[in-house]
Amino acid sequence: MKKLLAVLLFIPMVSFGQMDYYVSAKGGLNVREAPNSKAKKVVTLLYGQKVTIDSKTGIKLILNDTDKETGITKAIEGEWVEISSINDIKGYVFDGFLKRIIKTFYKNGQLKMEGGYADIDSLEFLLGKVIWDRSGSNYYQAINAEKGYAKEGKILTGIEAYKKLTEKPIKDGKWTYYYESGIIEKEEFYEVNLFLKEKYYSEKGFKTSEIEYHLKEGELLPTETKYYENGTIKSINSEDYEGRSYSEYYNNGNKKYVSEFGAGTGFEKYYYKNGKVKKMRISEDDFSLIEEYSEAGKLTKEEIYLNTELQDQFKDGIWIFGKDRIEKDYQLDAPKDGRLRYYKKNFSYPTPK
Image (cartoon, rainbow, N blue to C red):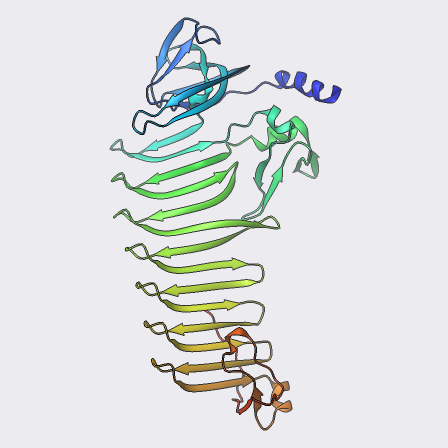
């Protein structure tokens, strides 16, 4: 308890620091002479007006806000903060209607980009709030005051770690980019600097692709989905440590192509538009199997490629068990219901799309 008290007393000494915010209340935000709703009103800030938070009072407040368009009421939590703005405006406002965001505009005045920054103060950080740090191209670490922040061979903790992590603004929430026509071009989603998802749109307004990211051992691994103009899925591409999977679809929703490849192994399938398999290729470390089918589902061609070692072992051909080898139930021994397959001399691995 004494340790926590020391932290609480120490925080005001390091200062909150000045940050730029924008008024998010559509009806504007009142500035008062004191941190109290009954205090004299100085002025009303307009929606989107830029302000600077000079200090926090610690006086908490919960307000019920009703959206005039939807009629939905929700509780807004925040506290009284001291702000300053243009024209020497100074006073106190409720920070529940302040958003740390940035906006840019085209020359014609059309909004080009808008996004928000995380509002994490040093006290939240010291009490365990995580800030995601991108130390490499796709490598993230969850940093808090206890874990610390590595800088020039030294581990910074506490306030020093917080200061280092917040040297640059930390993206949070939704970031939106627009075409000059006003139509959304791209959306990005963050969680305290951690990149979660991005969506792309055409100038006609339909979604062309979406990329979702998931963390695995600190690395961000993507899954990208592309769409036809009618909204149906065009392709899905997923990457992992173990390999890559890829699928394509016809605009009627049927599969067109599917593949999964890892370290020297994998399979791929091509489909007719009616859903029937057109071609199948299976690859293992030591052999490759290719089959082709008619639209009616009849096997029309089959090729087997063995590496040099297996060519010597199966000089007279190879027995493969099972009709549907896509489930990897084929074997290199000779079961009773297997049949003899002849192989090609030139062994090669399939090349995935």
